[in-house]
Length: 194
Image 1 (spheres, rainbow, N blue to C red):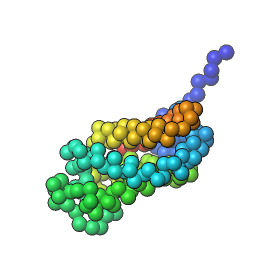
Image 2: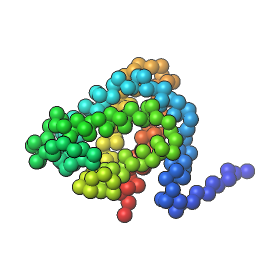
Image 3: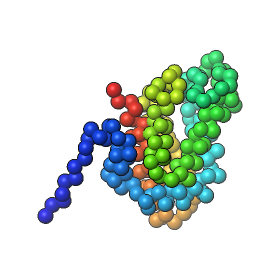
Image 4: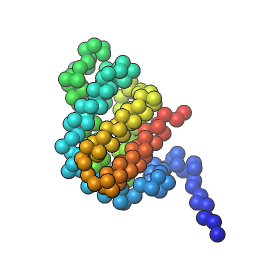
């Protein structure tokens, strides 16, 4: 007797965010145990968030093709806007504002309840990097978003390895965060279709 073929409403994957998340989570195998591991890592990861944020911004500021996206005014930011890339440093108030958002995102990943609101938040993270939400001037190319997600995934893995936990715990944490970041990546790339 073979396995019963599960039917998925593919059109609904494009129109129903919660259905899409449920499908991704089921297909990838992201569940309650993964969430428990991720939220259980909060006490270890939370103190390292400022360093992770700095590492991400050091990387983003090392390429013209990524740094240029920080020159336009960011949604929600009310301060002075840099005239050009040369006027933009990591100490600029707008960058501090953006770093704060990244820190909140990383903290939310390890402390948030993985409910419908969290799914909407993860989806908005993808949407806000396009003109579809936030600033109409912000349009980060998908290749840059993929590069960033790859860098973040590697930074999270390196951080987990740095904890020097037992092998089984390390493997479980790497797998749980990897599943989560693949789901996040889908909720980014979906906003680049059409």
